[in-house]
Image (cartoon, rainbow, N blue to C red; front, side):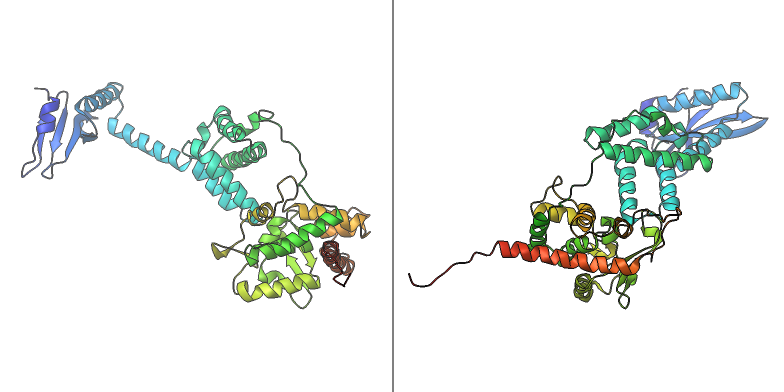
Length: 409
């Protein structure tokens, strides 16, 4: 006699396990602890076998019968239901191991560790915030170009067009990594060429008028934020290296005797080691900060702990606090400021300036200069630049001094 839903629900445990039979070989196994399991008894290859269908109440009587009928259909086609179930579980396990999130994480850990910290942070945020929610759980070999485009459209809808392009680039690298490691066959990101809104090429805002630079430097001196952020602002102006390089400066990279900052190739955008001569003003700032952060790894550590560098928002937020919006001055703008004034106001050779900016500079034979090329000349240039900044501050201060005569009339 077939079971009823009520009979299944009301079945009470006994001292020993017992069975309540349904139809076509299916029964409910009731255990002494009260758990109830659906089972199917069948024969395959001349042997009696048992197939686990599920657990009540997660699997209802009707649901168990559906699974029973599916198994009997497999038997009719000479397929062992137990073997089919095992193969299906293995496939699901492999798909989980081949999800986009798993492959992307593996790619990031394998391919991104030699990149600049700021670039690593931006790349991971794009994966975590913009791709994992939509695609992370999906098997990488099943993701279509349309699915990827839908995720990228959400980034575009925030007005973050440049970010959408960067996320697409990261996705393409993940898919290509999946191809070479045998987890997928193609890169759907390649099908999206021209699908996104074009990026607006825009130079980083920078102040290049000498008088305005003086006012900016006065504002930095008056900034009431943390000493670490204030020093980051001052070093950004004096040393004019990339924001990520300034933030990730380490005490081990400072050669006090030679008065230089030596950046290893893995930290540099061009993947070439770089040397920054340190003028007296920079040395003074570093010595002052060393008393508070010198025991840690980073010159400018994060407020969250000495094990990580200052946030990439630190200098940007400080500039906003001082009244400089993103269209007036940026953290990257200190480089354009130095590039312009060193050339137009101080008259230094462009190749000295470009080399100090760590741009790709080549000699007359097309060979890239090494890290110490023109080092003596660059030392003089960096000291003169720091002195020039001091002069601009002094001029601005003098222009704002009000003189008065208090003699008798």
